[in-house]
Image 1 (tube, rainbow, N blue to C red):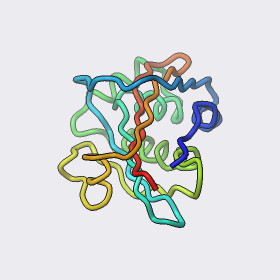
Image 2: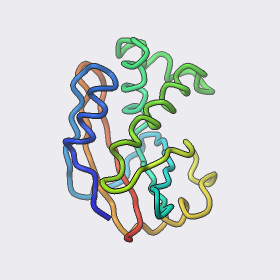
Image 3: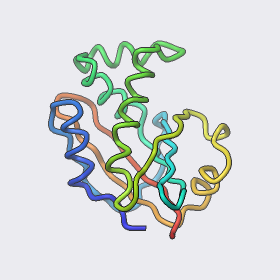
Amino acid sequence: MPEPTPFALSRRFSQLIGRKVTFTQVAATPDTAAKQIYGIYTVLPLATPVVVKADQRLLASVAGALVGWPDPVVKEHLAVVPMEELLRDAIYEVLNVASAAIAAEGRAVFTNMETITARIDGDAAAVLRSPGHRSYFNVAVDGYVGGKFIIFAKNV
């Protein structure tokens, strides 16, 4: 599967929030203790699964910029447990809009967002356990905290 480009991802996210967002492709990186959010996609027409694993703080930064919160306010809202509806919905929207840049071929359709890997099932769980392809990115968001963004896909 051809991988998405840092340029396409940077452009999509920058257009979404009106701030410079930079995706830099990096070699495989070890897992961190940071909380993660998983975006589950289906790429059409072959119905192949793709899973995005991103730092919760990164997605909260982008979502916060989308709703107009400065970074310190994002941090305050992220500390609320369970996650507030506005922040959760904004992260969901970020992952949905990102679908246009997640797949280099075909059309990715965002189907679900999870914070716990045990809730991911079916083909998406199989891709997460044993991906045929991984794309690792470090992401910087102008004026906000960035983080890691990883795309897992199966080879087609």
